[in-house]
Length: 282
Ligand code: AMP
Ligand code: ZN
Ligand code: FE
Ligand code: FE
Image 1 (cartoon, rainbow, N blue to C red):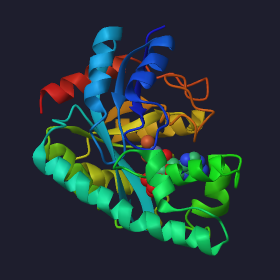
Image 2 (tube, helix red, strand yellow):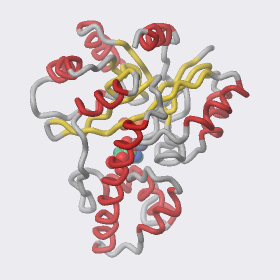
Image 3 (cartoon, helix red, strand yellow):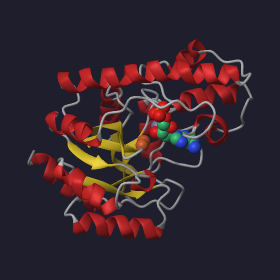
């Protein structure tokens, strides 16, 4: 069966597999088209593209930008963008700087809690400029402070836990504008994670559409069948494109596989044609 997967992380952000390793897993899973969507960085795209050419997999350049609205994090995916666009990459660099300001504060809090960890150890493991909490979780796993990334988030790193430190995030409308300015399609990632206290999801997505949003990630590893139906109806109602992806990260989400999610993810490849048509009109 031909599969697609439009949400994948690599070692260029907080995934634990290199772009070539992700492509290898995609090949095994029967994925014919995929998007690399690292957090706030585009440097993984060239390796993914050249490995894709070798394996016969279509690689769509992508990115995932974290933003915040109404007290909730909200992630915006960008697809088919001119990933070398200078203004886009300059702004992504400042977003990564906000990670470098936040992460040492998280480490200080962990140290205060009696945990032996330094930011240098995290930087060494991450080996990229886009450093995220999953990297910190992996160091905690290596040090046997926790046995899983989930435990690291539940006990220390998640919002509300003792080592949580917020970071400066752009608004969703700025994230959408950045992607559109780089000739990309902007898509609301994993709506299940949106926890806004201001109005309904429909109101929020209607506002995002007014800001330029093109689509909604309807198919996602942790969406229930009911959520998938609900988000599909929302996309239809607001005339938005439908996308889907696993959000594969490797070690920090060990139950999620490229192309398959938790095993039952099925992303219809028919949605690709609509996406490509929309991208061609940009
Ligand atoms: P950051 O980008 O540093 O704010 O970290 C957020 C990222 O951590 C998200 O994009 C997810 O990939 C990951 N994440 C959030 N919660 C968990 C969790 N419970 N287990 C594993 N990874 C998580
Ligand atoms: Zn991530
Ligand atoms: Fe995300
Ligand atoms: Fe993601």
